[in-house]
Image 1 (spheres, rainbow, N blue to C red):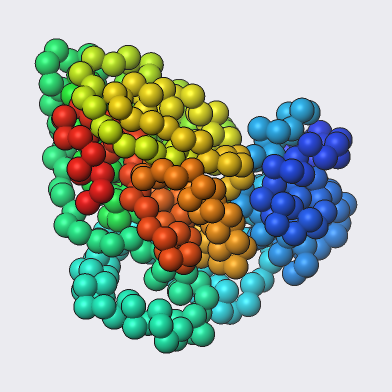
Image 2: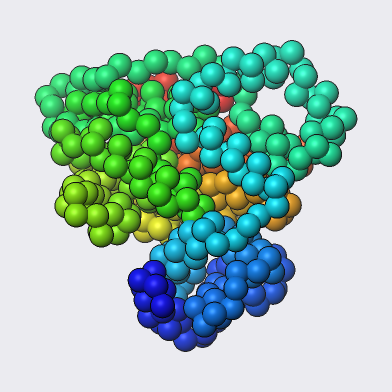
Length: 426
């Protein structure tokens, strides 16, 4: 038995197969299949530890898992399904040979999305593609869907692209300085939702923070780690740690990124060079909402007369346990009303690269979430993860409906600057 197997065995044995996870698991909710539930997948992990090879049927069940961690929240036995699925996916990538077409799609995804400069180079052609109406023609003909469902999913999910404001390396605090923080700009967030980063920096500055935005930062490794590409993810993690070692707090505005950055301490625990640095880094990582609530409000809140539906991103609510803080920030804005979405703990289907690699299941979950958003009657959807924003907006468009989408940072920004609701609907 390998050292990895020795780590997995007690984690597998922690599961008592009670079934509390079943109603929280998105794929079990969709299909009612035992092997597409957390306890079913843990049973398959146990079989693999006993010598069963990672054949296609077993791998398919692991691939269908979103890694949303709702089962971790629901489990009364404290089963570390997060560690189990990450380690199992790493084994899949080492031991299982995927078909050539699937390998090509995965290689495209991981050679593009974790690299902001490559995404930036794509912005120009993608903006032209959208502005000329070629995107609508491609959608009507279905040519991309026939060529590759994954490529079609990428095309559908791309948000409308405007100009990308360039952030300086330092944004000075307004008034007396209360803290100095580093800010992760991310990959998809940086290139597809640059307004979120700009709003985040402004809000932090208006609340009295000097905001440091290191030029040397890149991908945090979340997409790679959550997809079993551990060595690749660890390279990104080490670079991120080095980029932010000069600051006392690292603020993150994307749920998936914050989740993995808080996990660096576990991922690098066996690395004698990086273990202590990773531990220190994870301790000082904060989600934006988490940090602002800890800091306390100072800047005046102005009215934003709008009704919003707040969406719980899985890697914020389940992986980080952050549910109260975003709602508290929104509740502090005069004239803003928050409405809850039905089944908030069921994933929207984004889940990192899931909506690219499992587009049919992702679409079913997206449709469920879109229906829940519509039923709130809200004018604005607020989410704290770029993947969720794209996924739910796409699902709503598929239903012939539109809703404005904003990050918590953008709503706060509108309030602190006294801009009312206008900027949130542009």
